[in-house]
Figure 1 (spheres, rainbow over the protein chains, first blue to last red):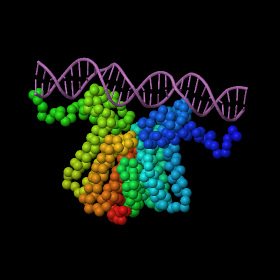
Figure 2 (cartoon, rainbow over the protein chains, first blue to last red):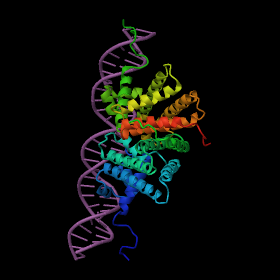
Figure 3 (cartoon, helix red, strand yellow):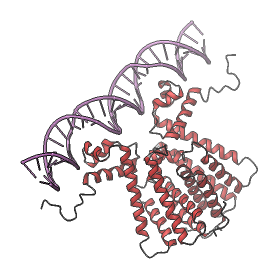
Figure 4 (tube, protein in one colour):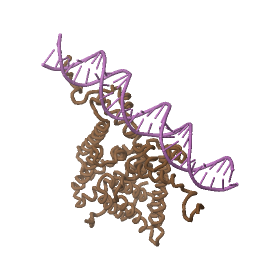
Length: 201
Length: 201
DNA sequence: CAGAGACTAGACAGGTCTGTCTGGTACCGT
DNA sequence: ACGGTACCAGACAGACCTGTCTAGTCTCTG
């Protein structure tokens, strides 16, 4: 009875570590990183300070873990999207559709990575490197889908889609979310409608 | 002789206040708002603490003043751009051209307003209201120019140009600035090339 | 010349921050 | 039965934060 019961997750993710990470993610995203102190995290996570510093020797390490997990979740979500038998073009639109839906949901406060970067000026900082990694992934995903669609200008158009993504999340957080979403839809249509013409250099 | 000599600016902007504002602007933009303390500002501005609190009773008021001034500067720059005898279309492209040049310059760290908003979660906060005001102005400018260009879909396309602007500054700050700039150029071409078709609702 | 207001210099209060350390409990595999 | 490890509770150090206050200088104005 006191043995390991069926599905209890213990090895990979101990409850306290999970609680810390979940609490930190919620607070960091909702209020900003510098605005949230360690004391608040451990209190709301119901964890002792020593336990916290056992898992995350430094606040910055927790921030990196927070972003890393966020990135993993998004990658998994994107992969799950492509599981169905959809064409590359349909999958691309689905990515923006899902993103737009999230952006219109409650508590949306923009891109966690962009927001984090605003608080970490040094591009060499681990946090910024994590941000760069996530962005490189997204750009790669766009380029991959566009290539699969047979577009010869995949690199250029992928860059444009990254612009639109960043614009949509910023606009959704700061202006009107629904409007940002629909504008993005139109923009994608127009951008993809363009016959891959003279790509300047 | 001891009277007000010609061009000496004294009434509207006393040297200490200007120094505070300039120092704060440089530090806030380069390092983030929460990351910069009052003590640091007064030291680098060479101003006494009492003087600082005389001009800005609260740090938040200084932040608002910083953004307000930034907004005024951008509005003035945009107006100066339209002074020449250019068509609306040319002026629109010029706006993005100048913005792109700044984004490629040294010390560029993204949009001051977006970055500030990342540190102020409450949309009702004066800082956020200032951000909203600035964004409303830019959107209005876009719509105005597009209307002057005779586009029937000015509102929709203006929204798209706002997306592209936000995407460009984010991309320039986080990825490759020159690339973000050139991608934006292509994107604008494609978006404006689209024959203002069926605007969804 | 007198007084008001902007300025300098810096001590101070009260709070919050990150990170360390002590001390003690409970469960684990061996 | 035992040692290691994860955990809890909370005091503590030292730095830094915003904002106040005292005390005195300088300059312009009436």
